[in-house]
Length: 241
Image 1 (cartoon, one colour):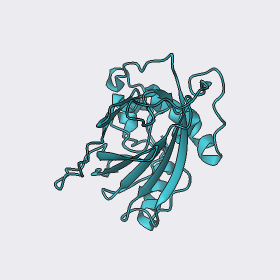
Image 2 (spheres, helix red, strand yellow):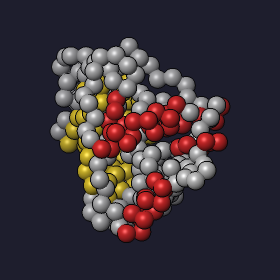
Image 3 (cartoon, rainbow, N blue to C red):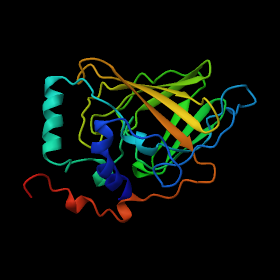
């Protein structure tokens, strides 16, 4: 399962220091094409395209955890992430992403997020003015509504279960997780995302971090079937095995 393996390879280094900027060549780092920000007929930035997160897929920084969450985090790291849901072909959740490309499809009333990794998941950002449903059932990816704030797409997501990990090392959250993403396309080749996570049950304060993705104009996302050839699960045995 390639997303999980590559995640383990680079996550320690990426968590310790800011990742290097995208560079030509390679799957995780690609050169961004130059040009102005494309716009839709409605005048909004057009976020459509296939995007690579590069090494920013692992960027999150130090999240302020409550004591129970910090203890669980330490336990998961000590056990070498053996219970990672993504390692067992379950959804990675939000805002965790894989190092593989994702595709944005934009319409005036809906933005669709198609993920090649993350067990081939999708998300829907509704731009039609609706609110969150009152009777949300907790889900892996949550419920997302969106609005434009000038040239920034603001995505508000709630309704999560507590089964996902926020990173490959086991960073926990509760069902109170609330994620706000702010997407900007400053030019043709870059997509900037500012992410704020709030969790009154697991965090001591909100936490904000940023990612920058690069456009892959000659690439298309590919089929990803985690269960078909998942070679990782048998190796997730934890410490002492």
